[in-house]
Image (cartoon, rainbow, N blue to C red; front, side, top):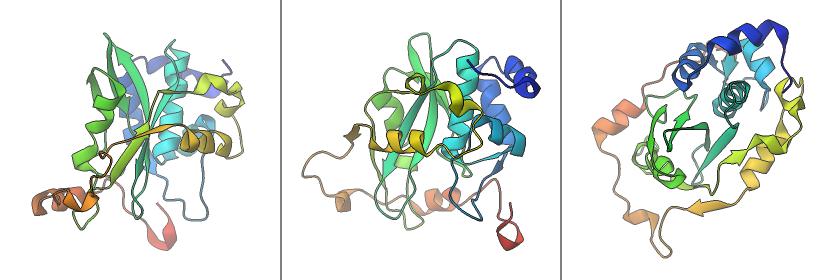
Length: 209
């Protein structure tokens, strides 16, 4: 596994998923003020800033350093909302997830889920627009293994669009039963919508974090 000396000490300390999540929680949200990005773990560490897939890639890299598989899970939404990506880990036969998000929901999941579907579905009722419309529609069928890529992604100075696109095009399982209309889903309650508007990081002036 390719490593970068200045960050090696950080990796060594992050020997549990909880510690990895704690680190990501200290990073600013990458609002992409200038253009879309998909930064490598090295660049994320340097900038101490990330959005969901960037945080998931860093978490997966740290997991790999500690002998875990570097795995991702993609959550896809209906039009009008944003997809989400988390890093997967497994302990005592159960799945958990590390998540970088700016909201009060869609966050870390303890390793209590027996399979990927169960974990993915734990996000369903928390995934909605400000109108209360629930938007989660599918999830990647299998853990997306980053070992299929050359380890240059760890330290690349270029955006990792190859990984982004491969994850996006991977087979996904539809959540709603065939023939079930999304209009039949109950809207989130007003108090849920209010809680869903809580953000950890606010945009600065002129698009700066």
